[in-house]
Amino acid sequence: MKIQRLRLFSNVSIHTRMLLIIVPLIVVPMLILAIVGFLATSGEAAKTSVRYLKQRENDLRTIAENLPIRDYYFNQFYGLTDEAEVYRRGLERSLKRFADRSNSIEPIYTQVRYVDQRGSEAVKILYPDKGVADAGGGGYISSDRQQVIQAPFFAAVRTLEAQQVYLSPLGPTMTAAIPLYQPGEGTQAPTFLGGIVLDFVYPLQEFQRTKWVITLSFAILTALSLGIALLLTLNRVRHLAGVYGGKGL
Image (cartoon, rainbow, N blue to C red):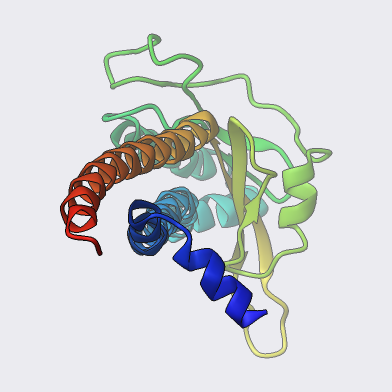
């Protein structure tokens, strides 16, 4: 069998023999490099979407450290309505400044809320459209505060521990929320103060488009590179085959 293969190979022209040897040495490394480059670039694109969601979680944890939330809760709990309202308005201004800064470069947040322990929206900052703006910079404090006790995010937040974050399923718009607790003393359980809720734009189509562009770019570049390399190889092999073939090799 081996002898038959050698005889078959010896009957092949020198031009074909050179192509059988050289072409795989060119094609295989180029394909390997293209695949490795594609996987590395796609991985970076995927990390970008993960970092985007992590930033939303970091924003929640930063807001959760806002002291007026605890002051508002305890003044409300002890029936100090006027004092609680002062802290509530201070929290409104604080959350609006945060959202205005976050949305100053590109629209991210569509709604920023503090929901109290009873599921009532105590603070609500709205950004219904990036074209809607006021003198403060992009959004407005809404007086249309509602009960959201039946909302999926609130039901989930009440079961979470401190610093844990709820994220809704991936989609063009998403909701992230974090519970707020006042640590208990001794054996006393922590007091649930409600939660901070961020409704934000998740650029799903942009991330998908980036992945598609990367795939298409690598496919085109690989095809062009292989095409040019094969054309040069064929031309060079034809020339060498003519030279050595004329010498009887």
